[in-house]
Length: 92
Image (tube, rainbow, N blue to C red; front, top):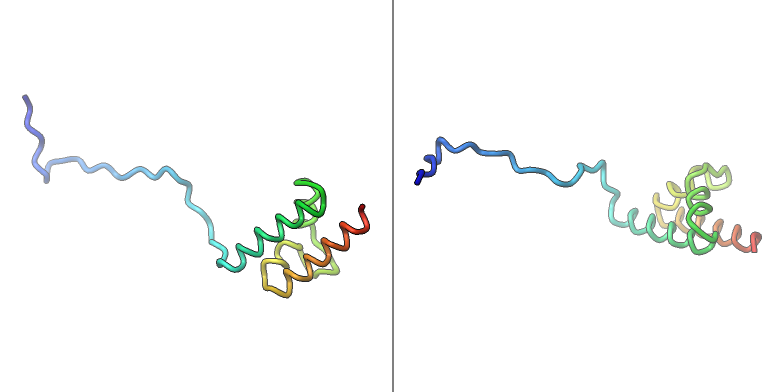
C-alpha cells in the first residue's frame, strides 16, 4: 500500500472551467426589454426569421437597430413595439 503524498508535495490541478466566458452582461432592465421585444417580434411577425431580420436591420425611422433602440430605455421599447404592431397590421 502506498501512502499519499504530503500536502506540500501534492500536485494541485487547476480547476476545470466547463463554461465559456461571456462578454459584457446587459443590465437587468435592458435584458428584460430585450427578451420582451424579441418575444413580441416573434409573435407579431410570424416567426423567427422575420423577427430577427426586423430586430437587427437598421431602421431610419427608429434611429438605429430596433433591438438596440428597444433595449436602451422604456421609451425606445415603446417606439419599437409600436413599429412592430404597425408592421403586423399592414402585413396581415
